[in-house]
Image (cartoon, rainbow, N blue to C red; front, side):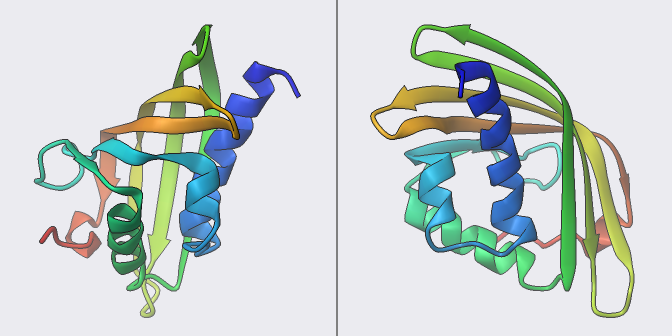
Length: 142
């Protein structure tokens, strides 16, 4: 697989972590340790760098209230510079509660990746929200 295809697949795996609730082995195949995260446009927390195990526990807790989620990531624009890359992509993320309510997030990912001995990994994930519906259903930060 060439680098461009590998980076697009990496974002698909990133979506699978939450959508398939694969919180054990998959995060290590997708993210660096530590990883830098910027979800400040969604929840009122500043960008942060966390050890991967800590971020995985945050993910597990954040997605626990939802019976299903679906992250459609499309329109990838990949730029590779040696062992570093950026991936800009569109995202539509839907999150359903047990009562059938849905929290919708539409926006863009601007991610950074690095080539490791085990393949490409996301080192920085940034989500910029363009639109939300039912934001009150979002997990509350800390």
